[in-house]
Length: 359
Image 1 (cartoon, rainbow, N blue to C red):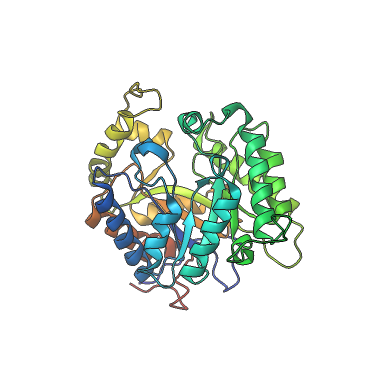
Image 2: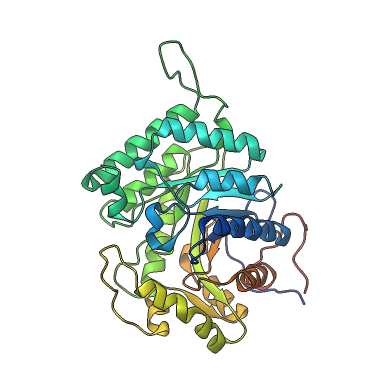
């Protein structure tokens, strides 16, 4: 069958309503080497399904149970086993790095991968990482802005010393595929997205952005307002704005079975915190509601996403499957169902196919 559900997205250059990506949470309890092999296998499978991009997050010291502290190294391994899928960071915690070294590493990765890097940068959610790197958390906004400005300068090919030496390999390609994840602090979020637009970078909004207080609908409306402010501030006459919004989904034809499958992940998240204290106990239903995760049959999820005001003007939809912590076979099924049912219901189809998926 062919899905003819309501479409979302502002459209991209190849005529599709949006590009589809997946965010990999590599948080199962595995030996690191096994976790990285699993990451490669999932990216290969996603490429076969037609996903436009795959993204990894950066978490130091297994914060959030994650394995990836060096996302660019991980993506370099993935690049050797894939040929088309774009390779993204969602996000690399830039203020804790030297922007010049980041530029060298990402430009090298871009050359190795054939120009497939999508570099997303942000300031990260965990204060303990800032403590470990000896950076003042209270200055995170200033330090992030300074780091981004330096990264722009280096990728743009500015002279880096008195000898006039510049970045090698060149970073122009990466510069055109740079994304910024902005703060969720309502006091500065509006100015932040306008600054992103003026810089010519893409805007990344996580599912958690603006989740503070209010209903799910109000939170999504706040994200929609940020998207509108970003678009209004865009000034580049040559390139189109890029807007990525992520949503936690768990498509499954049997909602009760899906709840059973994600319950261990819910308990896992409740057992971990940045302070070492357990989070408040919630049922799986309560946790999913507070996390704004969508769970159930694909057509039900598609209907909810189609009504999401933050998704109306996006160029990139990023799906993640938290808090499921799925086993490999279930992870592959989630990738398959999202690419074959959920995303096509919203108008997406693989660029390699040239037409909507038929089931």
